[in-house]
Image (cartoon, rainbow, N blue to C red):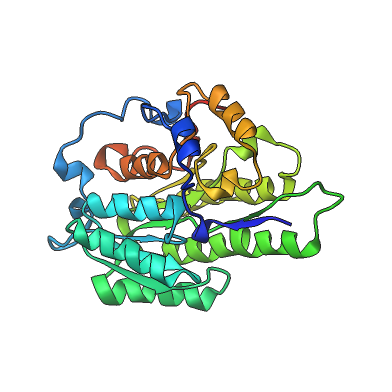
Length: 296
């Protein structure tokens, strides 16, 4: 049975597929953040505005060796944040992401940590505090996906999604609630599949809907600390999490259904997170942001 780990997902290298999926597009989000996507001053967009005592802010992104997580880590680095990159097994890729961030002028470290292990998650936050003095932004991105009809889904696959997507995200968000500095940002990664409710996606969609509940509740629990908590729900994004097991014709069908005429790219989702980290987006709190190019 096919399984994809967001912590280990590459962008498709095939030239023919890239040509099909390529196309100029304007970053689309839902009406929830319409009106805030305007030119920002460096003081409101840079991670430097989030730190303390003149130091740049610190961002921690789980599952950031590839795919959406890696794009988000790189984007936040460009925004001025010092970044903690996380992986489970792809240490070489995590090291490369950290090196890219430093090459762009920010600071980064990478650490192995399995989000299923609460002690490992605590150690990941410890590393952020030891290296950079604290945490201002947390993106709970790590996740896995198994697809099958209910009648064919195995206990092992369901348990894996529960362990990583539901428990692992909880471990990350719990630690974020304890450690993110006042005025920070916390993100959980949901999915537009929660709206599609497509066959074979049942348990996976349920694990993603949990992220929206997490964000809504945590936003209320952190009242008074000026911390915004939101769930980001990507649509069809050009990573193996979506493309594995699909034909070119099936992928083209999703392209045709998207108003912008292309699949999303990991950078599209990273830019939404970057926007929500800006000073002008603080009022967006406790929401599920469907960053899907209008497909749903």
